[in-house]
Image (cartoon, rainbow, N blue to C red; front, top):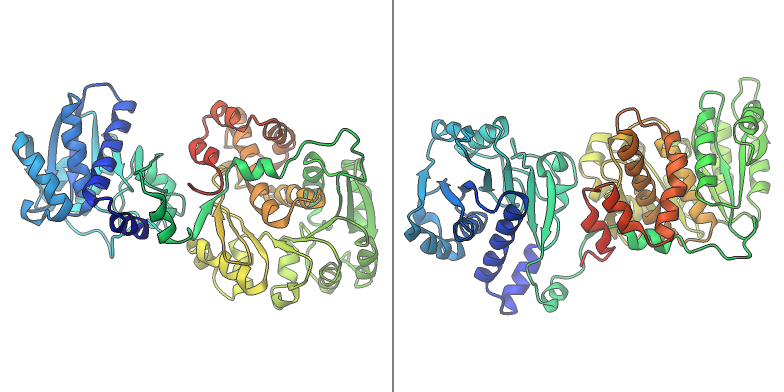
Length: 528
């Protein structure tokens, strides 16, 4: 965004015009959310974020609102475009309170009939922790009941990582400018952002080109729809994909059931489940629609090393392979993973398949395309890092792994990050805390494996599957609630979601369930 701003100004679009457009967008959002008339307190810092707040003050007064300013700087510190806005606001005779101490800031939690408070304290480029008196002011706002509207991003929230700089405003509404900032979706970002509105600033196309390609995008309905072409009228089980799923163990037999059922519910024509002989009968009895292929086991119940030969033969002629859910550990698992890596088909590696390769991830480098779907702990083992580090820096970790091993990476979590071997990355904005349940990842494996088997190109499948998976969970949560949602609930909502997307009714579905990111998901994958 900094590069786009600079390029726009170089192209002749004045910074003052950008500030004016930004401030008016916040005013429009306020007027759209609350009554036509009201009373606002605006917290103003000394930078351009404060300048945006001054535009809000002036335009709210013009709309008939009563406005009071809490000024966290000497007016002489308002320079450049912010200074120009101060020159317009100062003569208006507004009530202005200078906040110079923590004790003054602590009193800002008093609502006294205010409709809302506008946070125009700090921009997205803050370095270091929030200092006094802003720190106390933010704490008072967070403890109070006055709704807060954040200008561009909640003050104190890192725009890149979503980490609070010691403390951050908890807003009910954030109006961000131009394009969303990653920190609004990462880490604590969603908790502090509240409802999100993205206000375009009218950048000339040349400014976007001069700034270069965006390092981060988000997946939209466009990608999901592209991955779900209508079925041909003469389709048969052999023409809509054959998936080999290698999954399950005595301890984790449910993982194979979840992944296999999800694959079937996602439209795959044939799903072969290669699983230890000791649980083959269970899989047949639970999911009668799959073809179960028994793999030899040792006396202790683990996969035998001879299972690799069986899997290698099963991999011949299939359209895609998915391996990992609930496989367990041991030499037999490692040999089976090596067998599918050597196969000539698109490959999806998840869970215990990833663990089997953690000591030698370079083995995964192969000519047919490969997708891995790790959670932060699994990717940390590959990167010789810590799960907390990967989770905190997920928009850096996923592209790094994709580039290092020539893979498509789907780093699961909130939010899921998808990265291609060229280091292009995208966020998935669907899904909810109801997915924080064991087995949710197995459902994603089945869905993604089904898309690969149906011939969807791996880069598109890697983007579309998390979106479809999350959207089905969002629909389920809308009907059932997030708390208590279980992965098998998605078996009903996956085909329903796919039906709506295939029919071009994705926008209607987003509206029906009041999806918080409906506007962004509708825009598409370009982020334009």
